[in-house]
Length: 494
Figure (cartoon, rainbow, N blue to C red):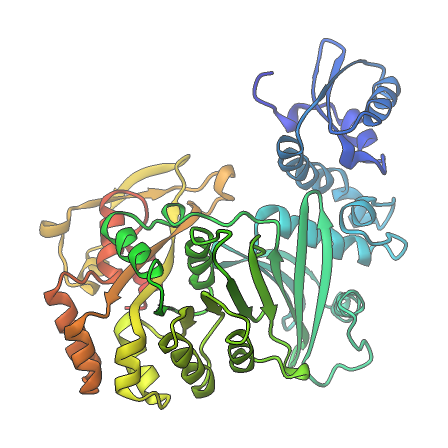
């Protein structure tokens, strides 16, 4: 059939459909000349489709489709239709809502607070948000989503709702509702269509009342390939060569949220086979990958990064992924694992690749051990991409160019920028990709590590060998029209 327009469906069809508890098995996709077209994913759903058509006085045409086609449209439709259908009902505090019960597995008996929280979770998951912030202001209660790395305000609510909403979140996260003086952590597990979603909850007492931040871990999310992340050409060849080695440490650096774990899993997905024993320890486990033995940190039970690596070495591993090097014990254990013939993939919080070497030396790792074990250090950031649906040419900022040591004569007078449209939620950006810098640890770099050379000396030596910084990679994307100069400056923190 032609392109589906969810907004074109008659309101009586949508309103009636939303009352069906079984609506996650069928969905109306079109109405033309008195004929209602409905997608189904089960044989029994044809009965519900027939009943829907009978109620709205239309003939029926059903088409059974694969779940991979059905669920993306279903989630898009629910996000659109429920927001429209319940807008007036929310203001009046009337009518029932079935979305929490069916989509998220909770009762709607405590409406409207339960309905508000359920719909917020549904909307965040459907839009691909990574975090939800529930926080009090002086005279209001704010809900914000983090989309593509940036916080966006979703709703401003009455301040009086703060205590009740936070209490509801605590109940869902199996936390102590009566305790509001200390930070707490909890966990919520939900299922939305095909998606199994794990939500980590953190509450914090503030001067404006308790704040809750919900980290969304979509375990059904597909693991991206290295090219999908933006790795290409020589960069891709360097990374693949490093992870194909039988031993050594491959280290990915960057701040929280820069995609380090995603990059490691993209690489790991290329290494999975029946002849390789791969083991990971993470906090938390963010992706599920078949053929990999994954362990989650549990400090209360004594399961830490360092203790897990030591245990792994008795499990005959070929490849070990360590979620993060946070302390000297973990760093030392990872180095020992690499020196005993294992490939170790891990991450470290530093601003760039060269600084990672200095950080590990400061942690107490002996220079000769680090020089012998380190294979590759890479730094990365995520830049937002211009929305292809509203992209246009704009004048480039000379002040921004000056920040990176360039001018319009060398760079050009214009760049491409998204104006903002419905497709990108008026942000001008849609999607993200990585910008990278790669520091292979060759003999010259090893000699500098042995000398405990400064970061500047390591960078200078690397540039002699063709090293390209994240900034330089980002500028190449600006020239190609894929992102903004200001966006590259923002993520590289110049």
